[in-house]
Length: 152
Length: 152
Length: 152
Image 1 (cartoon, rainbow over the protein chains, first blue to last red):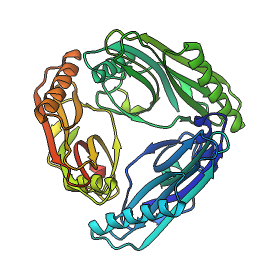
Image 2: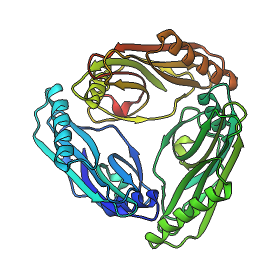
Image 3: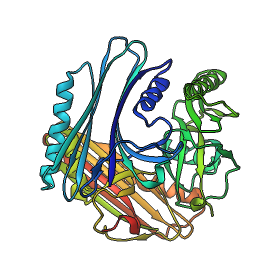
């Protein structure tokens, strides 16, 4: 199994467009996202996001906050733990929270999930993104599952 | 890529059954719907909804409102913009809103998405449906992604 | 089409971890769950849950309640009606509701769905699970769609 980890932030004229712009900034704006729950296969490999086919059906874990409250500090975070037998992903979000706290929360939860499954963490990757809303703003962090069908 | 655009409205003895009846009225009641986020491939073709296999896994964009408040006017809308390189879909909904406004909102957002991607709109299709709730009512509008696996 | 029906309940240090533990207890903790809407193919066969590949993409109907209110009695229920031409699934949940009522509600709705489609019910299976929250607790009941790709 191959995954890419991406994030993006953007403003837009509506909440939907801000969200869409954040996805585009992250490189996943031109595909169909199918949200899945957060488990990885054996020895998952982290790769750079390849160029995706427009309209492809792409499985992902998505952490998202979109807000239209000026001055709101919005955070999205994904924590990825990779192991031999399997891996786990946790997503967290925050509004006016401390970014370190959101990150810590994700790390703690993903470590707990791996411990509970008796799988040693070989690699732990955390991606966070923060944005201060100007008008209508959005942040996204995502783990994208990559397979040959979706690559251009 | 082929898509069909459908809509339906219905009443039912429970909110879930009203929703289910609206899906059936739209012709997509007998399949499993997997909600995806709203992007189309190059030169997407609009086709009439084919007969789908019962229980097939069907990707779709779904706009839905279900309400049990008698007299509520409920709207569901999807706007579809088709282009050379890719296309976009936006869904909007309303409760006691002006149908034209809901439609306009969807069109504006989908036009913005296409402009942002520098893709010319070759075709713009909007589907709206409105229902006045009698007891428990539901409206749905959907863009259904069609492939050979799901056709009977 | 083959399905397995499973359920689980658990406590955890956070709501997410309680939910994850409940999925693990049900045997579906190590896969990616893709939520689908609730229709079955012709003559669907009920099978025991096979060993699933870690990280596999698994379609399911999922009924879930997670609560951090000590003493809350939480219920999850799925009702499955199997017929010749197709089948239907309904999920219900409750907090401090009577378990029998949650069950009855699911059965009534699934019977209505089958009647509406003029399909005779050949088999009706109901799975319920109840848990009294100690600290942070979760219950899940799920209909898991089984295919060769996801079996280890």
